[in-house]
Length: 340
Length: 119
Length: 151
Image (cartoon, rainbow over all chains, first blue to last red; front, side, top):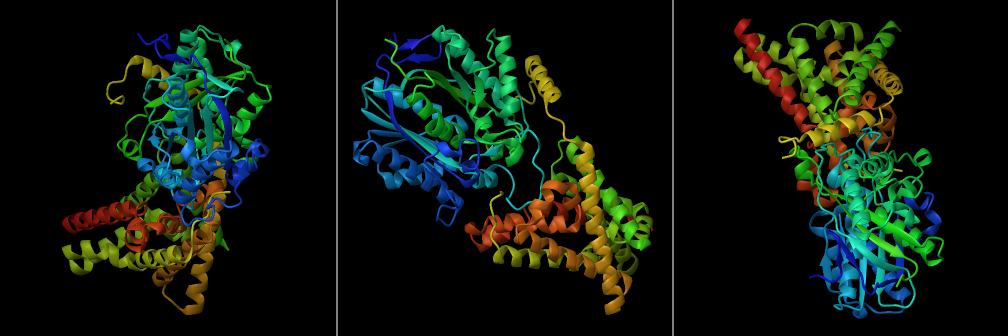
């Protein structure tokens, strides 16, 4: 019998690991967004001094990890495991960054759900006694994602209204046994859900059922209600996806209205920045959590949040072959105080 | 002056049809281009596009159906001159300048310039 | 797989998504497409008239020369990073003219330069425009053969 498992998909951490420090780097456009001032570093040039965008993405991830390590006055060798991933084929950015960092790596592919997946796994490994310090990290880049999943940058096409803007950014969080919060207290691992949406320009609609399923399961498993959370924030559903997820949760009997938002909605100003439905990409929930939410938790203006990063697990191949988009969402509860 | 107005009008209308196809259906720009070039070929074959070119001038030859028009017209003229072989050489012969320009200028610009990220 | 064995639940969800999806502003988009498409065509007509009168070319040769000039301009504006900005507003107004064809050749070629000049630039050049040539040329050959058979 698994002593730390509650309900069907949730883990309750008996000694909740704390998030010691975070770091966030974003591209120029994200820096001009409403959360611009919260990020540790805003790049002036999204090539970041490299000669390809893929290498720039990898460098951002490496920088985020290095920053978080130095912030805690540690060295690379002190870190037991790195949990990370990105959107590029074969986790190019993460693997290349880990080659330089020389920290044992668990490479994760959860598409844009990677941040909460990495946070959850890091917390479990620490609570299980397998590690003292872990880093959860992920990065995405508008230009690398566009060329892998969509069209060349200079092509004169129009972006549909439901389309989202991949966030250029990297976030990293250092977890360990530490006196101060915030703490990760629960994680709910999502199932792959597919309601048959094929349109890769409407990721919000594709991912909303997965988000609603995981959030609903989390409430069931932990016996909590939406109003017990200061904030329930999904990864990158965008504004249309958020509305759908909120409708779907209503059919499950959960009313989420005021405290339910989405990292993709928060990071851009759709009127000024022409980002349509909102931000997306692994980096979206990573930088919103590392840059913005973490600071609010630290200063205790938020006390309990549910971070639900959402991922669309399609590939360029599956999209071209006309397959529908399988999606996943992972939830982690982060509290500024230890409950027990 | 009348030539400019009819070019503006025909060119504009062809683009509006393309816009309606992209907004109203799930067709991507690539689908629309393929559809338009093929439509240009077929419309020329049944004799509908020629009057449009006479009336609209560049308004009918600059949009992609105009490329189909040149291909089809070339193929039909090729048949007149060279028989069955003309069906194979006529179309590309008539459009060889455009195709070569696309290859050469395309390559040149791609070598000279680098893409910039969207603002 | 989901496409072939749709459950009623999935179908219901897709209908719901379809119903609630934001609708594009057809009127605004069409006006932009009409204006930009019309302007590009008018400019083409201007180039055509200049070539015809100044260089003394035949009407057909002037048409071909105009196409050359327009392709050059489309390719240049793509290289300068202007064409995608026009396209954002104009939509089909800048996709459907031959300048858009040039844009669809230069943009992937430029983007994949890091992958080298053979497989990157040259290999990717016709990733979007190739289908246009394939279907255009093939259908013209079919038209030619039919013309031969009945003519």
